[in-house]
Length: 468
Ligand code: AMP
Ligand code: ZN
Image 1 (cartoon, rainbow, N blue to C red):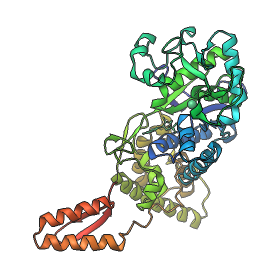
Image 2 (image 1 turned 90 degrees about the vertical axis):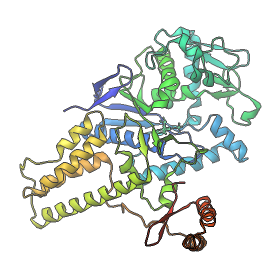
Image 3 (image 1 turned 30 degrees about the vertical axis):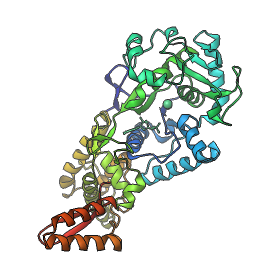
Image 4 (image 1 turned 90 degrees about the horizontal axis):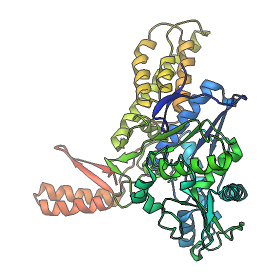
């Protein structure tokens, strides 16, 4: 059974296969902007892409998959962070790149084969813009910025299906256009941004004057350099579909005169407690936030796989508890299978029961919840007599595909309340027993402000770190 994945361009399930004679599957995944720790929403996207990478390796062989994921290390956000902290841009982006790598390793994500940076590919971006200028797809505005002329590419809007006229009224485009008052047309987008005082030292020379590349051109240029003009799969979170990927298609196809990507895949966002994650709502979690609450990175990885990647997933701390139980159960089952296989010194036989059907579910549009369901429904059957070695080998393929590291402890010691919090809780409990409910409420608020919840029952109370 081939791997089939939803293609955002044709809106259909299409088979994934290498399109070039060398049989190498070329895979580009838009990476993070490195100015702060990535949040668990970002990691939903990277974990889903990691499962795709693993499936591709199982299907075509590890040496027949080339995975490129970029690092956006120059843009408004990275520059602002460096200016605010009065540090060089490269120092700030290195700090957050290192943190991103550490988090990806903890989540057991395979490293991409190439991880190019925008600042490391200025000449490649300049070359592409130069071609677009020569072909008449781009123009230099009076301020020295260079824009892509959207009207020069007939197919613009094919991915997002937003017509140019509609775009002009669209809020997304207005936001994207906010910094570009010199454009000939509102739908045009920046390829090269002329140097502004706010950019400080973060500028490079170009035929159009000093400045820095626009965001979209980096992916077109790095994909071309490391994977060639035409790739097999390009992915990212759903927010990248427009304008980022629409613009990438326009730039790449106008520059190269070739199809850019055979397949486009977008995974949906993670919500927390039913809401979009944001700092102001206090529901933005990083991996460290969850580890501080006593949850393991593996429990997070598992919980991120519990929802279908093309549907929004609502994250809650409860889902981490379910993930912990599932991981414990899985490890217990695998350890048992391994013991039997080792004790019997058994060789793989032609026992028909395997975990391969789980991989088949996964190959059908990375249906991770369906595959987890299939895995657990096979476990009782696979515990019955048969070839343990055979079953173990196929189970290990499944565990590889999900990227679960069962050797890592799925449950970390849960956070215990510091002494001053326990003292507050004792005071509140005493107030409640004395029926001083107003006083008890005030103390509860103090506990909440300190990040703790007090769960009352008849027997007493329990302290838990609050969700935020
Ligand atoms: P960024 O660092 O903002 O460029 O984002 C890195 C990746 O995370 C992109 O593929 C985004 O589409 C994705 N992303 C951003 N927010 C979320 C979210 N709440 N849930 C899932 N993916 C997200
Ligand atoms: Zn990109």
